[in-house]
Structure formats: C-alpha cells, structure tokens
Image 1 (cartoon, helix red, strand yellow):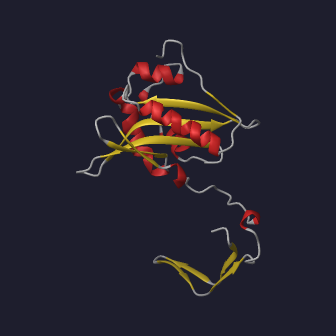
Image 2 (cartoon, rainbow, N blue to C red; image 1 turned 90 degrees about the horizontal axis):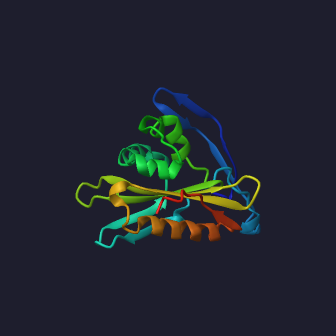
Image 3 (cartoon, rainbow, N blue to C red; image 1 turned 135 degrees about the vertical axis):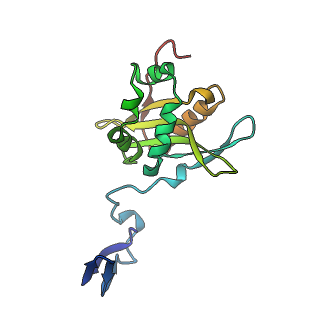
Length: 193
C-alpha cells in the first residue's frame, strides 16, 4: 500500500501460539502528495493487468497469466510433457528432465522479479476437478544495461500447433509495449518451424 509512510508495532509479543500486537501506529503520506510521487515498492506486485482469458479453437478456455511461485509443481509436470526435440529447440541443447525440474532452477523461474522478467503461462483448469495444467510458457527477460528484452516460448508437445504459442507471443509483445521497451528479440534455430 503506497500511501503508508510507516508502521510501528510496539510491543509485539511472539510465542509458540503466534504473534500478538498490543499496540500499533500507522502513518500515511500527506493526502496532498501526488500519487506519482509516492515511493515505489521494493518488490513489484503481481501484474494482474496481464491476466488474459483466451479460448482454443475447440472451445476450451485458458488463462494466459504471469507465473506465480506456487506454480512450481505445475512446472515440474509441464517439463515432463516435453520431448527431447522441444527441449532442444528451446534451450539449443539437450537438457535432462532432472536438471529442468531441479528446485533451485524452478525457484528462479517461478519467483519472478516482475521489473526484470515476466514469464507467462497458459493455464488450463479442468472444469470438473479444478486441477490446473500448464500448457505453455512464454518469457520476456529484460536486458540489464539496455531497454530491450528477449522473448522465449515453449509449448507442451501435445498442445503445439493450436495457436497457444502465437497468442503468448502476441501478449508478450503487447506487454513489451506497456513496459515501454525499445526492442524485443528472440533467438531460434533455423529448423524450428
């Protein structure tokens, strides 16, 4: 909440049953301060403005949305659906499944600093079981010293050629515009049609 200038909780009692605040004080910024002059948060909040519903040609509803930390188990399942060919096309080398689903790696992928990187997932929720499945991942990785970003896409083999990659790419380009990036680029192998 950017309007909060400071919070003081004193005393705060901590014990085996939890925390108990006996007194608290919250100071707000002066209401005459223009919103543009409010301090920026240290960590950018989840970009809800990039959550987009989308339908496949067959009528299935997907949600294209920024990745969340709790997506790590879904990313493990997603990587298990990829063929060696798809992995090679994305990473330009063969990367073993055990390497791709390593917790340390997935932590970096799922815990995005949205100021530097925005990863989108194509999320399919089963209407009966409410179980979620990631069908594709698109990533916009900003360069450190320039106002540019690299785009990368990976679609699960069984969901390829259904327009998901194209839709993710369109959304990533739109996000690049909204983030006021000067240039977007992507690298792909010549044989990756």
